[in-house]
Length: 196
Image (cartoon, rainbow, N blue to C red; front, side):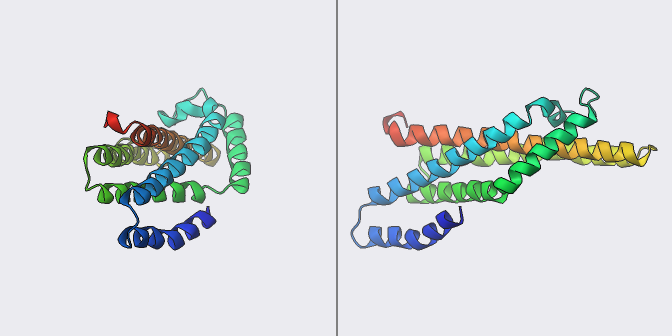
């Protein structure tokens, strides 16, 4: 991913220069469109793998107080995620999503935020803002609940582990749905321009 970012830093001025030196705007737009598709398709694939790992504890996303999830399962899922994080660090996905958002913004600027580019960029922002409003508010309330109880340390550690895993599952599912939605919208935009 670092190579992609470095290539972008080197090639982006060339793209803009190509456009300003007589290259067509279409060449620049194709490069931006392809980059958006690449970043979000890549993110969707990786986040889907994480969602499949987390499927047995998906209920923690909505209710971290759930008694259905045994402690052994919580520990097992956390161990699997840690192994995967060593193979492919999560900051690469965050970078891909941020770069994808940056390219969505560039696409909007290059098209003067016409209807298609506004729809795609708006969907990206709405998904992220909705996540912040819905999930994080519930999670903040849950932290207060965990630490205001008169329970022993082992129970609090388990509750905190469930809370953290539930938050992680929520991040991954919302990230996956956002990346998938943007990928499909961008694909429609690239291949079916008459649709927009």
